[in-house]
Amino acid sequence: MTRTYSDVVADPYEAPPLSFTDKDDRTIEVRAYEGTDEELESLVDMYESFDPSDRAQGIPPGREDRIRDWLDNILDDDCLNVVAWDGDDVAGHATLVPDGDAYELAIFVHQTYQRAGIGTRLIKALLGHGRVSGVEKVWLTVERWNRAAVNLYQNVGFETSDAESFELEMTIRLSEPDE
Amino acid sequence: MKVLLGIGGSDDSIRALEKTVERTANADDDLTIAIVENPSVERSRDDIESKVSEVLSGLGIDATVRHLEGDPGSSLVDFAEDEGFDQLVLGGGETSPMGKIQIGSIAEFVLLNSHVTVTLVR
Image (cartoon, rainbow over all chains, first blue to last red; front, top):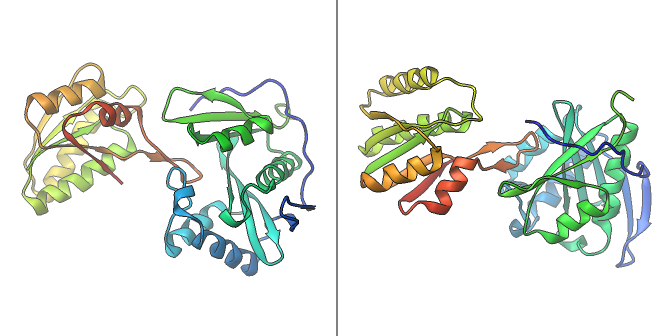
């Protein structure tokens, strides 16, 4: 599929690890996923209690076996994942999955941690992680009625590249071609 | 039940073909398969038709196979309504590398315009 990307490289964001205090005074740490069993089980726990009404385009899936299959796919070595932690609990998770010469992005913030500024910090950390890992182009789709998500993506530099279908497609450039 | 399956040759339409023929065998439905022009698909009509024959003969099912010309979504909707079908079946979309379901433009048109019950196969 042909997608259009801005010629202009987006502002660089800080790569993880980093930490901040959210709007509810919780200390949130954002770290790149390293592939330990503890991290995986904490992610499974987060997605098992994820509100199905916040599902988008079929993800996250709803049953533990499907969650594990899906995570197995997006936590693969060629993907880039960052996790927002509140102690040992996962507050949110964002991922870049390779797709040809670009990466597809998705981000999930658990209901307990929404509207606390975590999504913005988490997606910036993911884009920072992607940039230092050599990612050039990132795309995503979002349901067009989901204003909160669309605003989040616009605020960090995504631009609409296709508004013709059910879902809005947005793209961002993280580095120059062949930099 | 009189069932119309619309396929344009995308991977999800081939999956819909396999599942629908299987269901026809179990439910004793009356199946018609309409091959439409999907401009975003590389599979040729001959390829699609031989795939249809292969799946049908594999399960020993008889079905009418038709070729519809012109805009795929509207030709399917017209045909389903004119011929009095009970159900119009389509592929339920592709999944992105992330696993997100992405509904195709034909399904999108049919869902919004068909007066015949629509089934999307997942």
